Image (cartoon, rainbow, N blue to C red):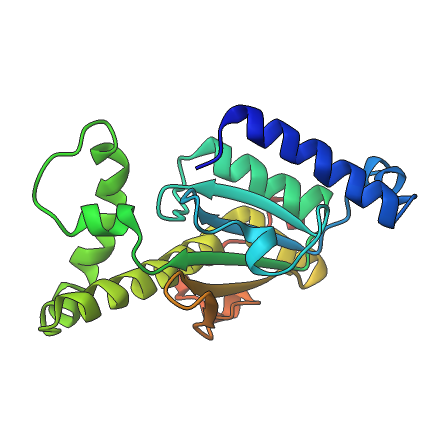
Length: 214
């Protein structure tokens, strides 16, 4: 594990390397950001968005929280989403979960974990929705993996319910929503083929008209 001092020294080496290989690198970086992707991922230290996708700084706008949740009362997430969609005009929003997720695992347990229990409750709601399907999986590890995938699906679905996303679809036919899962056991990302790009894919109860269109 790196110490704080080692991290600072590492930063100096990184900056020197970048400047030597690309003299205009930091001028470009300082000029602003134009990412095409907003990444909503888990806070887990094993899943750095840029590194696992071989992306450079400035390529991916990132929001992370425990178990990559899209909670409609989370002003932090909503603020990032609004800025990414309406200011940066991202073309894609990716919800990326990961297998072996501690938050998802905690939601499968029946014991207290502290303050985080208030957050985990949202993940437990996902389990309740799919309890019959999950309970039918006898292998515990396989059930855990499936729960991770179903949680990603529900978060992508919850993104599509927001007025931020639906208004963007109405006004510019973007962004496209995706659901992925990173596997720390292999280093590979699994595309769950969860792609939303129109409110017409939603049940009628979730469809909203843009307030400005009336």
